[in-house]
Length: 69
Image (tube, rainbow, N blue to C red; front, side, top):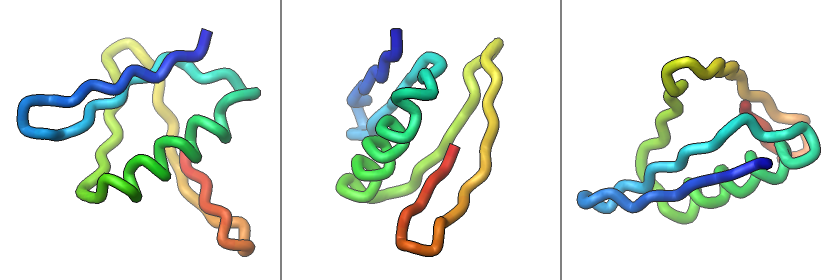
């Protein structure tokens, strides 16, 4: 089951933790996280949790669509 856990830390920072997101929900989860970071502002960092793989790259599709994972 896909899960996104959002925690508000004492300093007001949002900490988002996910498990492996299924291909069916991946684009929607990326869009949600991108919109959340845009609305909240500030610096965005991605960190792999110990024992979990992380891959990363970003690209645009030329039509204003931005995708990162």
